Amino acid sequence: MSDVTLSHTGSGDNVARDKITNFETYVTFISKTVPENLQTPVKEVLKKITNREFSKARENIELISGFDNNNSEVKELLQLLKIKCDISEHQKEDIDLGEMQEVFGASKNEMIKDLALSLIYKGEVVKHGKDIALKRYEATSSLGPYSRSAAFQLFEDKVFLLGVYENKLFTLIEEELIGLINGLFREECYQEAFLAAEYLCRIHDNDNSKTILLFSRAYKLNSSLNKDYWLLGQNEKDDVIHLINEVVNVFSGNNDADVRLFNIVIPSLMYVKSHNKELEDICLKNIERVDDFNKFFADDLRLRNRKEDLGDDHPVKKIEKAEENHSYKNSLINALIAKKRSITTK
Image 1 (cartoon, rainbow, N blue to C red):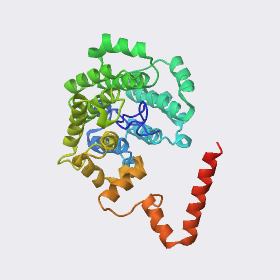
Image 2 (cartoon, helix red, strand yellow):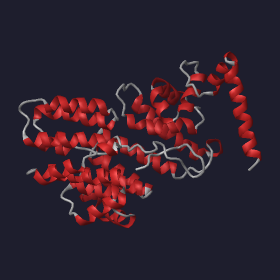
Image 3 (cartoon, rainbow, N blue to C red):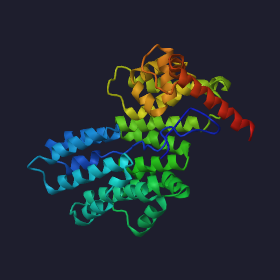
């Protein structure tokens, strides 16, 4: 899915480029399948995957795998979590569809089989594209909430999803609701996604649901913003500020805030032209995440706040280097002349 942004060039930009923002939950699965003594470590693995800390997630998986008393279901789950890391990280060459198929075929646990099928769908989309994955989906019956959730997220069309929203919303369990909301995001049905997220949050009041609700509010708002921040009417500006305040409140006094929210924090700060001190403080404290998102914007933040470590490509760094290095200065001048010539000859 593409992630929400309040930064506009034209009709709207995709924030996280090719990164997937995970809105899944495995609470039911863990409580029914994982022994009590392993539930906390497994939840920690899932948290690290959500926060895109894939190396740490893999280390934790290896640690849990070394326990002597793991039953077959835990071993199968750990296999799938390794593959989930590869899918979430978009490591196409590492996604082992054959291994997932083996777990799907061999497991005697219906929830494991269902989870495996959902990951097969997602892995095939990442590795071979949606068209090929769709053929598998059309030839396979979904087994349970995880595979149905993946189908909502990846394959079902707008008409089908709206039908589920209108007629079956109150019959869906948490995993299916999240898949439906993901699918509605994909089909740009932002009003319905927002209302579904509100319902999700009422029924399942947890941090993941609250994050989804914030994203749904941001998507809904983003779809109505088609001009520069300074050209917005007062009501529109109030809506933007309300969203920003909600996100800031999550970070206030919380050193472990959901990193997915940076997909709202950073573009929001860019959209309001950095005229929000609280958002700017959050970004300065997490400047490495701003680097990943937009290196030049991160360097501008550093420059305005007298922070060091500007990137080598930043104009200030180039000027400093040109003052110290005559040949580098000439190369910059020659590059500018060449660029000007190419423009005038077009």
